Image 1 (cartoon, rainbow, N blue to C red):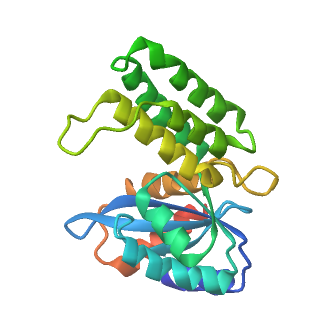
Image 2: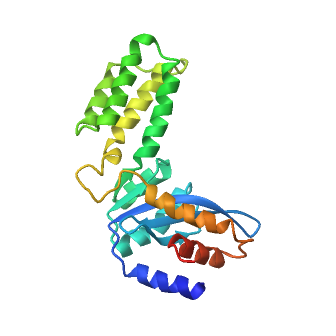
Image 3: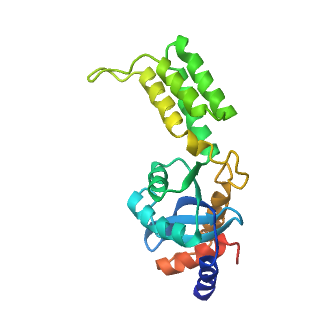
Amino acid sequence: LQAEKERIERENRQRRVRIMGLDGAYVQGWGKKRAVLVAVDMGEGKPVAVGHVDEHDAEAVRRWLDSLVQSLGVKVVVTDDLKTYRVVTKALGVKHQLCQFHVRWWIGRACVNLREKIPKEWEWVIDRAQAILKELPEDGAKQLFELWLQLPARRQRGEKYTPLDELRNLLIRMSESWGRYTAFVGDADIPWTNNRTEQVIGRMKMRARTVRRYKSWEGMAAVLLLSGTNLT
């Protein structure tokens, strides 16, 4: 296993990966669940690296990803909407595509919750924001910002946080993140979801369930990389 892992790693070092998928997972090993970060070539749908890194640790993710970006020539990173990835991709100067499935899921939930709380006369703002997300117009960021401007001024310090404040925060977050929602527009090679990375992690987890336990990171990394590559 170790020899095969080393062979794959040698091959991966020779790759050019313009678009990389990135996601974290937790796998049982030597006493407890261990944080794992998985990088996937979005062209071939195969893992290029597996790291013993917690995706919530921005500095650790940045250090680990920086070497991959430099060695593989990565230009675009596809992830879910975890704040860590937004911070790290900005620091590394790579284009960032947020998985549209995750984006639409959390924004959809936020809108459902807000509808139950905001005054009826402002529901049209939610309708328009959802339509913009569905249509993905080029000037979506501007349209969302203009919606934000139409809402009543945010609360003053010491005043109670209101549902309209929540809606304002949602709109400005969507506006500021618009480029990350739409990086795939105009570039057919950029996927609009992170499904390929999730599929690789799914194979890793399936294999992990058949292993009694991992005794070290070296053993875990070897089996995860091989199972993610679909080798048995």
